[in-house]
Amino acid sequence: MGKSLSFHSKRVMLMSEDDLEKAHERTWKRLCDEAEEILKDLVREGIIGDSDYWLVDEDWGWDVLQIELPLTLVWTSLAGRLQAILVRYPEWWITIRVADRPEGWPGMGVVVSRDRIIDDLKREFLPANLRDMTF
View 1 (spheres, helix red, strand yellow):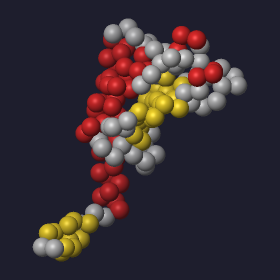
View 2 (spheres, one colour):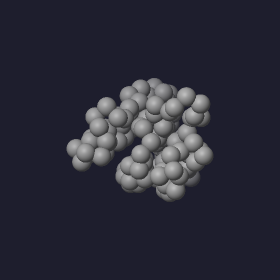
View 3 (cartoon, one colour):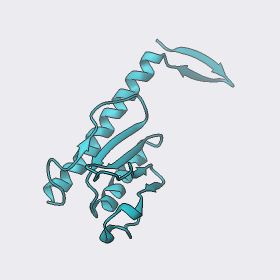
């Protein structure tokens, strides 16, 4: 059970570590379900295949959801769709990492938050048709 603390006549509830962990798990599950629905929409639209993506289904305790996906032009629209749901999860991030990289390619991808997209794609490794991809 939480403890209460009086601060300038406002009551602030302090959550136990167990309560915080459970709240995190519930948020992770909701976000995971919403991201999965977006990925399944792309499958239904024929943009990606059923086995093309991996939504990491393990909560590591961080405010991060992880997706692995082969590099295609779908990345820009996917990042935008994911960013739209992150408005409801302001402290959370979603990473999209290049899956099935050829040997010698570095790890790379994008990191999506509610208000920005960090592009960490190494353009020199990308096929010519993807080098100009912008987020």
